[in-house]
Image (cartoon, rainbow, N blue to C red; front, side, top):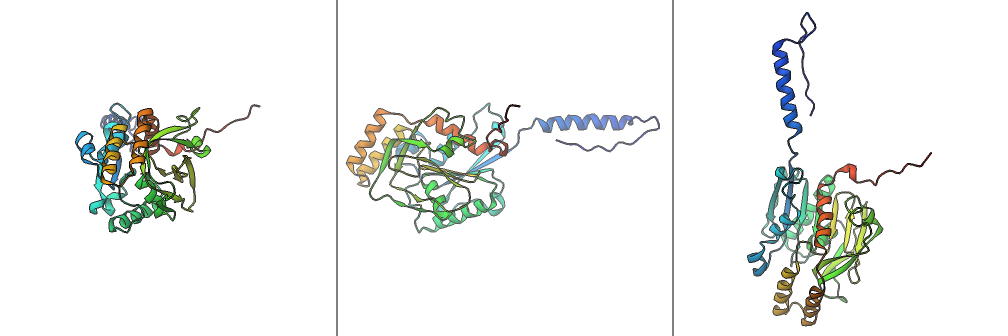
Length: 306
């Protein structure tokens, strides 16, 4: 912090006693400001709801994302971090005055179609376009959010008819673009692939043709597992917020209701018996992205030896 001081000169060239006391108070105040954590505010735009089991044992989707991404106690600035949550399915959005106060936004998963005609979905698409145009807010989209952001910016999302449901633990392969991204390059060093829980039938079929779009990851049946737009949008198809226990409950519900074929449900259960998702790795990448500094965006410059 910079403090400007007006010094009244005395004949001897030294500040008056009152000025010295003011200077001391000002220095103390400046030191306090320098040690005050910078407030960070994040907004979770909830687009779906947990089933009864998850709601009872873990909380609502918006709560899962806050717990996943909130700074841990003891992290720098954790005590100054603020999280607000909105239920977009009920038409809840931050006011125009408030929306620019947030440093980052998170769009959650949902059982709705990201390309659907619902009024709140169109409102959310418009909201994303406005945030993207502003250019200074970090936006993280997960599953439905991943698809809706692509859709809002001119891409295409929809059912992968020949592939069907993707459920359970799946292997994902990062591209060179993801390996070089400032928020992932150290974490992915030496890693060929990672696993994440999937729970989707729709997916991004075509990336938006906007400046700065990059494919970040693919899998066997989902060509667009992750992508970015410029430095401030990151989207992932998988569910980092869900553990195997949660996914088992959702798969069981959807098989029971007839939404998911029994064979797809059995396959999903097998994947979760054999593997756990790399939840910690993916979470660290997402948390870095939300809190990253502009200085971290470029890779370290290399200097040639003389």
